[in-house]
Amino acid sequence: MAINPDHLLTFIHVARLGTLSAAAEQLHLTQPAVSNQIKLLTQAVGEPLLIRHRYGVRLTPAGEGLLPYAVATARALAGARQYAADLHGLELGTLDIAASSTIAATILPGVLARYHALFPRVALRVQQGNTQDVMKRLLAQSCELALIEGPVSGLPLDLKQQVFRRDTLRLVLSPQHPLAARRSLSPEELTDVGVVWREPGSGTRDVAKLALEQAGIQTREVLTLTGTEAVKEAVITGLGVAFLSEASVRRDVDAGRLICPSLNLPGLERDLSIVSAEEEVLSRAVRGFLTFLV
Image (cartoon, rainbow, N blue to C red; front, side, top):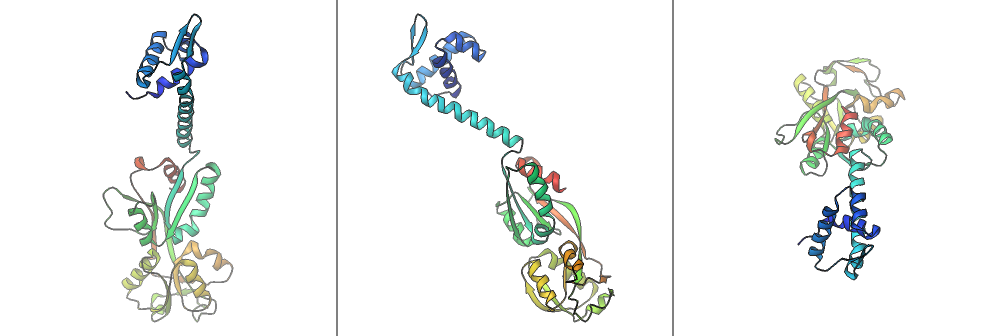
């Protein structure tokens, strides 16, 4: 017969108070109910646990031996209840997400700072990569939430995609670039211009290439680099122009390290999206984070 944890808790009260009636009163049970629980616990252990005397009960050697385990069980149950309560109140947990490079660099820091200020004991785990990498991590279940640039096709039925923000790609170039003196450019002026591209799998790369293709503009690929920061540094040194998120280049443009002329090229706006399972199966930590992000 299995030992019932509730019977162990009752046993602790009887052992400490010395009478079944006192234990029943403290547990808000009837004395027969307490007596029955002790009887069932005794049957499960297979040895007498209590000896009756004129003033109540005392423990047998078997009862003395069982008491430390009963106390340990009570502590474990109390700890489990507190842990569940902490999770319910977002006092504990892990926020496990993956984000594309642009989102991780420009949007997440501020959102995570506000989230951490309210829930400082929730561990933050962010995996970063391009859109393709991030989706692979989500599909491999190494994160609960993917933040990506642009749409994805062929999502499994148990995943959904939700737009949470719009973003615009901007043409950026070095102040020393031959086109830097122009405040406004036409798409045709980019013909055969050298471009520094993000790596394959990048949502930024895919959106910009599609916009150029639809406009019939043929550029010249100079270099392919992984990550926004590497591309910016290459552009600053004069290796070519690039298409990058407006949010990711704002500080560099304000500081005069990059020039950002206007470009009338349709298709450079894109959606930033959340990809995840339905909210009811997500952890409380991730559900709480979504309220900050959306």
